[in-house]
Image 1 (tube, rainbow, N blue to C red):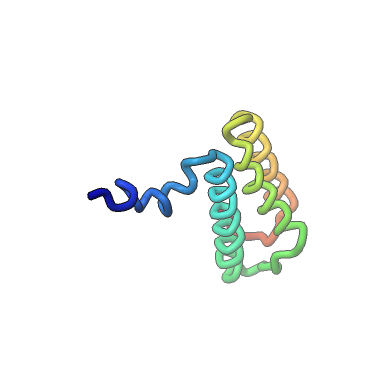
Image 2 (image 1 turned 90 degrees about the vertical axis):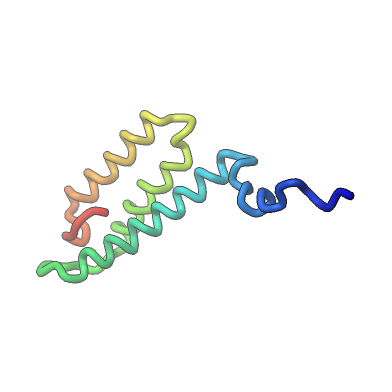
Length: 99
């Protein structure tokens, strides 16, 4: 008597294995959320703290969004993410640590 699939857990845990773009988008979302939340909390106790504004959020999100293309263009994604981080530091956004 056969009941269902052999590995029914793969239906829920293997959703990212069907397509690489799903895993890349999930990674970009996790990294972006971690960057934004981490930068917010790291900057809260700094003496010359500024609130996160639209430019700071856009720079943090752009660096994370580049990770979606990391499989097709790994070198360019690395250069772009480092360039965005350098721009963030040069503009002294939030004057806090960069996560």
